[in-house]
Image (tube, rainbow, N blue to C red; front, side):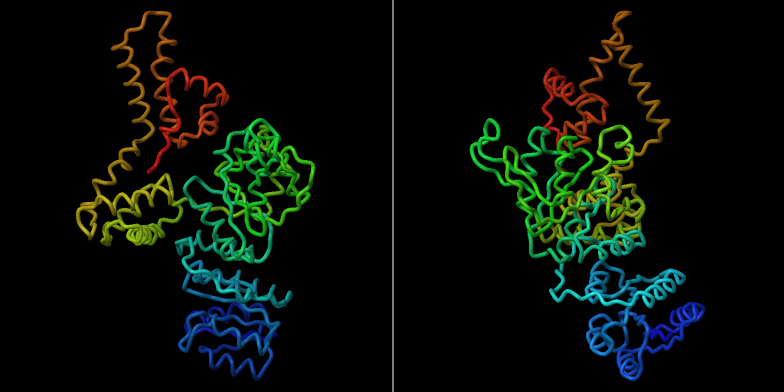
Length: 470
């Protein structure tokens, strides 16, 4: 079977040709759009493998001509322009697959073989792709994310986005919505961990007038608000079990019932869920429904931590500096050594922490061009939190010893006195870590949420004042 390869880089063309010929394909190669069109008009090919940036134009933009001549021929696109925009443009053409450079030759050969064996045309969506895409990064881990995103744009499969806090799970959900076939509908995001357990069903499914005390009118829930669009359920691992049961029923039946209502309301809503927790141990512990897990985990997308994609840090930092400028902050630039220094930081809060830091940098930097020397002092809070475990243990032991010396509690009461001394700062720090979220704080502490609320009241701690706003 004949395959047409359009690639202007001689070295890349040679290795691709060798890989495809080893699979038994007859490869004909050209290096321009004009030559491609001439060859396609003269002969039939089983598949087209094409680069994007060619000497006489854009290989993606000109694929309309290819579709007119050989409409059912599968197309595999190669590109060194490794952005989400390129991946989406490739998907919008109905391409069988998109490979960012560099790529695995064996995987390319397998894909061509699969494409030829399953030659089918996916209709391209003629609606223009939105610009201002929400994701930044060209690293290999992000390329895998982009490829997964393009696979779910033209279907309504349920997506589960997995990743640490701050990796950009909502951004991925927005990208799927904005670039997909539901882009004309609403995008409704709800953080299930931030809604009190007694209100979450009303928030998601709505309620009828008189359903409970204070229900003075019908309330339309998030499912109905997202009609025709996408409902993003963030932190789904923190959803109470009763709400999980109702969510499962909604996903199975395609309909909901408002709290206090009898009428079944059909829903036309795509579901994207996200969590920073490992749901499988929660299933074992009886904290998450196994059947719901399989319902939402149809297409998992794993977001890498920022430490796994250090090559993207400079691009992200420069992106956030531009963003900060559009929001009224002073225009700043990073020197090469400053960008390199940023790339060496741990960024345990991931992209969110980096963004917050860059905004502070834009506000507080003394010079428009920020170099490593001026950046260093602003990074001290990051370095200071990197003490080795042994040093932290020693510091904690020293603090306990100092407390015993200063307090001198009588024998038989040391334990109670220590609890009284350390409980309040412990609760305060955990609440800061969770942004004031009591449910997550209770889970981290390993105590009942009601117990935590009671102790917070007794200790005079106001969780809402501890939410980190940076």
